[in-house]
Length: 315
Image (cartoon, rainbow, N blue to C red; front, side, top):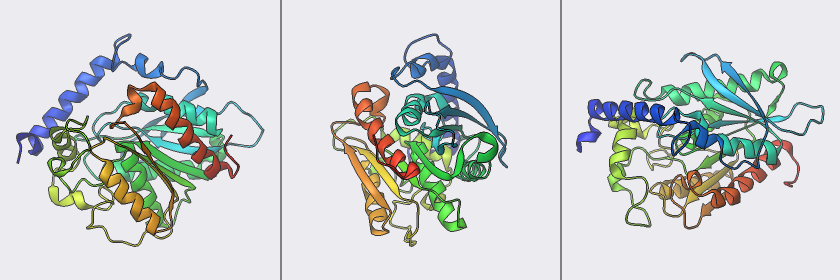
């Protein structure tokens, strides 16, 4: 066991990363600043407002992105969960994607600031995420969206949470989800990062990072095979028939690609896979630094969201 795989050490490392991210986010510019995240893909513009959603884990802050087309009827709604290894709290990481989805798919997008580890270890995040989605489904009338036309999605850890929400919706009999978007998600935390292989020698995600993130999120290794954390692990053999339709997006060089492919295959067997797109020549989190690839992939995701939530053809 590496030192970073020890719960106390991993938690200390995660808290240090959180403090550093706060310092960087407050800068007026530069990598990691909130300003830099909000400045990405400026061609996508839309109105936003903040909401606070009550949950049993405390209030969840969320940013609502509103589509520009106002046809009178409330728009469908897509709930997004940001990335960050289940430990980083910046909802702004996914700002550009959310703006793109609102503009290109014509849906309201709710970007959720969920609880993170080590302050809130598993299963707090997936449970809270499900409570948020259930609230969104039930409160559309007062908030201005159509909660009956509902999708979920996320990037990296957020994709893992979206998969967990879809699983809970299947098990609980609702709410009904038209689509789950899983963008380079971690779907097998039961397999140690050092046992995973990427197509390149030095992928962005390294085993030490998996030690910090996975151990902070789920300190007990025996819990990491839980269906809400590792649906791509062979230990999860439940029948997924009836789970929400899914778009899975993987990256060619990502350390997490294999588990994304494995889960896409499992969803295909269950009749739930509507698309699997592998981003060529890309690594984990490629869209944060490669705006050209983001401009290719984000509209593709928006097409799937538009078709699933509006029932119409993508523009």
